[in-house]
Amino acid sequence: MNATTPKVYGWCPGALRPMMSGDGLVVRVRAPLGRLTPDQARGVARLSQEFGSGLLDISARANLQMRGIREEAHDALIAGLRDLGLIDPDAQAEARRNVLLAPFWSEGDETHAIATDLSAALTAATDLFLPGKFGFAVDCDEAPVLQDTAADIRIERSCEALILRADGAETGKPVTRETAVSEALALVRWFLEQGGAPEGRGRMHRLIARRAPPPAHVAPWVKASFTAEPGPVSAGTLAALEFGQMPAATLAKLADYGAIRLTPWRALLVEGADSLPPLPGLILDARDPRLQVIACTGAPGCLQALSPTRDLARSLAKQLPAGTTVHVSGCAKGCACPAPAPLTLTATGQDEFSLIRHGTAADQPLKTRLSAAALRASPELLKEGS
Ligand code: SF4
Image (cartoon, rainbow, N blue to C red; front, side, top):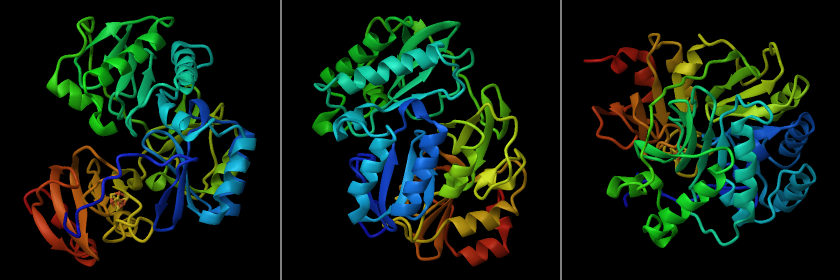
């Protein structure tokens, strides 16, 4: 491993198992069913301001991440979060209950009912030892919206029926609202029995690349794509967040408009709201050029970052042609965008970036040693064929 090789932790921070970063502890709150009541949202905002930097992120698995928490304040923070009903019985239960549900659910529909039962079953499954990032997606609306979001086991609608699908497989097993949870747990046990997690690490799609899903997984699956855009939706109004981050004061203000649903798209949904006011960190217009740039925390907030990322991303956003997306990554790990992007700038040193086309942050670069100043002065460097 050289100085520019990022460290892979193999687990995600939780509230009870936080991770140290460059700006203090990262405490990730796994809100039940990805939803904060207005009182919970105001409470989280207050705790973030009292014990942390007052900055909140939404993770790619729709969790709320409190940044800059002082180490000595962690116990008091957990007590505050517990009072708000946002803490699991223990760190293992918190890690197991990694359930993402399509955020456009209505109370009592299949997505809501199955995600509720699955969360309870995972909390109770104390004999289940899952790899750190192992997660579930419940996506039962007519048009699936989570297929491009990372998950290991999926319960989704395909050809008008519900299926259970191992991530990476192109077929699934027919299930019903009543059988979906027990079948999902059976698929977890199959994954473990098949050696999917040697030494406690592993993902379903890697196992499926080596062997076929279980024999009963023969129901057809149809690939669907979805792009989230800010604006009114069936359950309220969707607001994107610049780089998936907002000041705590913005969350507190949004709570005046309704309960908050967290989404995996660097956006949140305010239940029942017809419109939202402009607030720091919010993007309310689908044409906002900041939606064309993706950037991780970068330096100094991340200990592994080789350079700052967000100022560069902000200035490039104003110069990009419509439809072009740029991912600026503080190191080759590419946390903010694990999938290939049309253009990626990966930091390789302080104010030094490599340019990768149609690849991930770790892929072979087309150009190297580009400074932020050179990129700002000559955005044509990012154009095809330049
Ligand atoms: S990609 Fe960004 S956030 Fe992730 S480890 Fe590297 S610098 Fe940190």
